[in-house]
Amino acid sequence: IMSTAIQTSILYIPKTHSQTVTGGSSGIGKCIAVECYRQGAFITLVARDEDKLLQAKKEVEKFAINDKQVVLCISVDVSSDYSQVENVIKQAQEKLGPVDMLVNCAGTSISGKFEEVEVDRFKKLMEVNYLGSVYPTRAVITTMKERRMGRIMFVSSQAGQIGLFGYTAYSPSKFALRGLAESLQMEIKPYNIYVTVAYPPDTDTPGLAEENKTKPLETRLISETSGVCQPDQVAKIVVRDAVQGNFNSSVGPDGYMLSALTCGMSPVTSITEGLQQIVTMGLFRTIALFYLGSFDSIVRRCMIQREQSKTADKRE
Ligand SMILES: NC(=O)C1=CN([C@@H]2O[C@H](COP(=O)(O)OP(=O)(O)OC[C@H]3O[C@@H](n4cnc5c(N)ncnc54)[C@H](OP(=O)(O)O)[C@@H]3O)[C@@H](O)[C@H]2O)C=CC1
Ligand SMILES: CCCCCCCCCCCCCCCC(=O)[C@@H](N)CO
Image 1 (cartoon, rainbow, N blue to C red):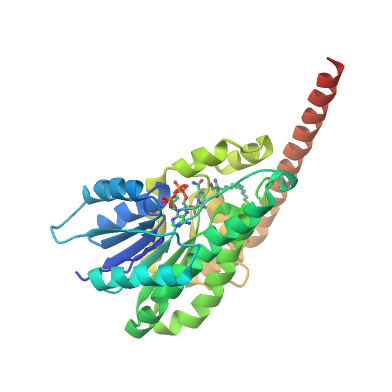
Image 2 (tube, rainbow, N blue to C red):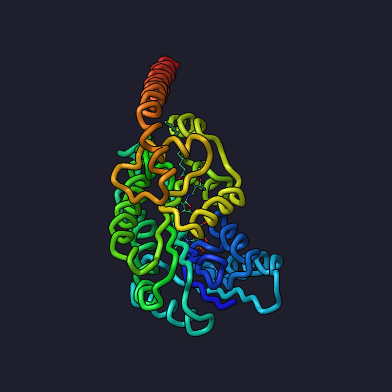
């Protein structure tokens, strides 16, 4: 097995060679790294905090299937300076060989009402979630094209398929990944490089726990629709889809419906997928209208409740 991996995302290739996972020190990214390691890949974990990286490295190493496997850690901010990102990826490739699969999982979220989110957060989220995926991808793409192989995963979100109450800063940064992925896929398909966009629902991670501290009631009630997943389940699904070269990777029944419904002009991976989209779209739009109605009534109910408790406070 040859291998290489790079940065904030995980890059993985069929029958696992080397893979780089950005955001690999926590949550979904860490589970993706474990999943690939269990299949024999060489891993590069990319994130900022060195202690968390070392801790994650120890956890991933428990799943080795042979004694040649390596987990490399790189501490870098994937969103701030391209030349820095390029440099560390180059170093990783020198140590572990060219990256077969890049997993762009580094990211963060904020929820809150539009006018309550600090203005500079809008920029911050675009930098981390969007540019933080552009930079590592840019750093590996030339080598992948030369080798005529590779996988690139972008970890978006169900909130990258629908805009929801509370996600005015977060959703656009996840929608942006879809535009990037579609454009890039058209360029690199002839080079045998496949792009995957993953759309997980709420997933039980330190990132979600952090987000929940400030989450508006509306956002919480709406998100409950598709429930909370475990990160290792999400990792299994998205890694399988990336290895198979599927453009779209969805998790759970709601995720499946959302992806069929929002497929638009995105590339199609198989005849079955295309047929399913054609046959189900009208039905899923009908179901979606009911969901949208229930989301609107959640928002209205919460507004009325807030106003009532405000007037009650005033009377006291
Ligand atoms: N959990 C959920 O409910 C869902 C999450 N997602 C997406 O999945 C991805 C992972 O989420 P989750 O596992 O919950 O997140 P966590 O907060 O648990 O982990 C985030 C990871 O990204 C790294 N990271 C964050 N910012 C940077 C940066 N600027 N440069 C380099 N590394 C960075 C963190 O390390 P460090 O801070 O040390 O840099 C950490 O390793 C995110 O993109 C998120 O938007 C999508 C749908 C649902
Ligand atoms: C046929 C139509 C079906 C419609 C189903 C609609 C389901 C809506 C639920 C959306 C949940 C959004 C989760 C965002 C997770 C996330 O990215 C953050 N937690 C990150 O921390």
